[in-house]
Length: 461
View 1 (cartoon, rainbow, N blue to C red):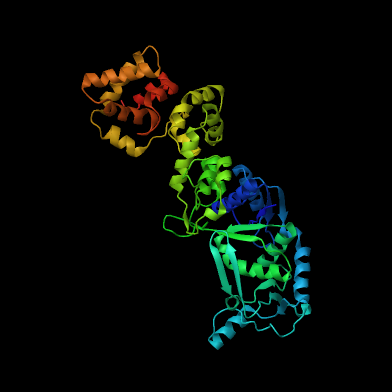
View 2: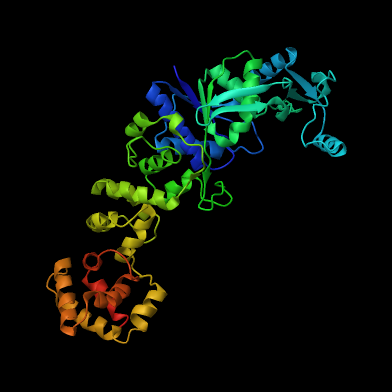
């Protein structure tokens, strides 16, 4: 049975690249009827935080990436790593080394050789009581070859692999040892992870063989890059899944977009359900070139998913974003008004955080004005004051303050003056909604109400 794992380190917010890797593994397991294991690599006590563990679990759950086993924590499995380290030492596959980084660098400089560890302690016969780090004894001469599920055949000469550290002098296990021991213990059959781990794979394979274990299949998915083709960085780019959730991305839209970063189905479809993606997914069809994480395209995806929601589902999804605003009370009157506007709002937003700005003019008592729009459409417009005054009078006489009647009143005024409706609407919209853009004006007015519309117009007459 196929068994895959996703093993994030809780050293920051959950990266979109990690989310894609997790979903690839999840789809592989689901398609094969296998098992998906979640494992938290939390042995780095200085960098790990419990809040980031919670963030990973919450983000995966939100995206719908459920796990069959775990979450396991490496910090609770230290005995396994210690036991494996002892076996490697006793078998002669590892040795203790007391060299400091300064000593290693000094020898390299003095000899004019390449930087890195020179296997100085390889044959010194140091034991566990030396207080040194445990290093793996890379077989020389030799080479390691494996077939990557994404990249094809990869060969690395052992001369290019230093005798890497398995356990620090403090006794803390390092990445390669802990991962290999866990993969063996958990029966992992396929290791699909980010490209940045590719240099570790020959080391992992050597440790697998030294422990007498069967090798899993390996696959390394391409890195994600920004518009400048730079690797996505949390210091420079918006990369946290939590950030996109807070902006109002829908989980199905985000997972759909992430899945297509480096892979596409044979028929070229873009918009797919999770079930459709899982059925079509093939790790062998993932490309190895860097994938452009295009936030604008993901927003487009999200907009498509938003417009596919039913009106009630859209209202439910967007209410938390309204609740962030001081002008939103969520009472019966506001809820009813928003329910009437929601179908119009749904067609005009790409992310749910944009909803509030569109409906703000309806619910805000003290209208916020965009100064540049006021200057252009009212202050610098010599006919604006007269227009606002004349239209206000007509709106005060409209029997029913509803969209069709309001449009008829304004359109009639425009025709009398020989002006295009849009010319009349611009100052009216700014005066009553605070901005040149927004929802359809007459539907907005109907929800604002006659008294408040006239009050806003009067400010500029």
